[in-house]
Length: 453
Image (cartoon, helix red, strand yellow):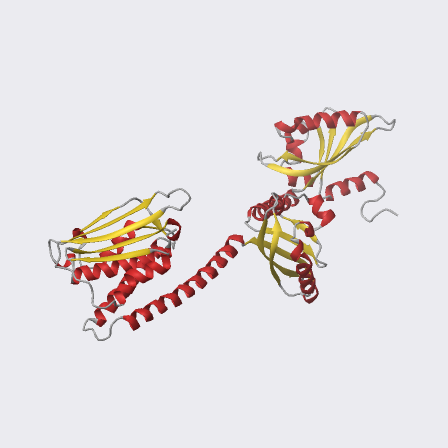
């Protein structure tokens, strides 16, 4: 039985099918002349049947794709069907439209090719979706490959299924090598077993994973990485993947270790400083009327030395800078002081010992000696003496006062004498002499150069 309303006319049935199709169905002669044009073709390309029938199908084809029609004509003439392919065609308004085209030969009753049937499907939405997906994937790939971390994705079983470019750049491996041997090849053997055991525990519990361990670089260097992974779940909260990153923390770890060492050093030096201050307080004569003043001056000397050491990052300190720093803590008396000597660097310990002595002698000179009068002068001279054969070179420094009040030796050695004589003698393995000539006080120190380095 034929469908109602179509009677027995098969041609009417075929025409109805063609007109109701969502795809453009176009009939054309072998020279490309358009013979038929259904409603979908009007909707897709914008030309009505009355406008387009009789025109050449090349009207729909952009200039840069005309060769496609040449290939289609050749295939159809041979009686061959042209399989579906995706291309671009033109609308009436000149705009481009993405289509999927299939072309089949039309045969007469004797089997000769007399025309062609072309079906064009509008795939604009599909292509737009595809373009957006590709753009999104390109952006994600650009982000993943240029982020500072090594990034990776693992399945729910922990097997890594994707790594970013940064991973391969750092490790010098290839996807094939990673597929064959896994990440254990770049993990430090001393940490690998424990790290992987902890990771498996987190795979089982579903909790975020974090660990720190070394990874080998392409040039064989082991660097420390903070590694993290978080589970990606579906709507039912089941784990689909694990997304992980490895962040290079080598410099931060080294800095933390340096800070820890620095804190230990600060703690050690603070205790030493407190011990020195306690010693200064105990040994400064409490019965002297200037006890507080003398103690404060000595503490200021220590503070000046510490400031200089901090500015120099606890490294070597030039002799001249050490002396200038101590004289600046006194009254503006350095105009009466002459410094003469080569560039010699002192270790922090040697600088502290000599600074205390220089400050003590400067304080005494300001109160009782050459710096207490305008015409008084102090000469501070130092040198490095060549080493006699078989001996080490020596460092010498001297303090000479002239033009001050007459000098006399102290009746008994006090704590000041200990600072200028005993402290450098012990700390620098030095020979120290003092002279109390009436014309001016003098102080001489000699020690091995190795003691001040």
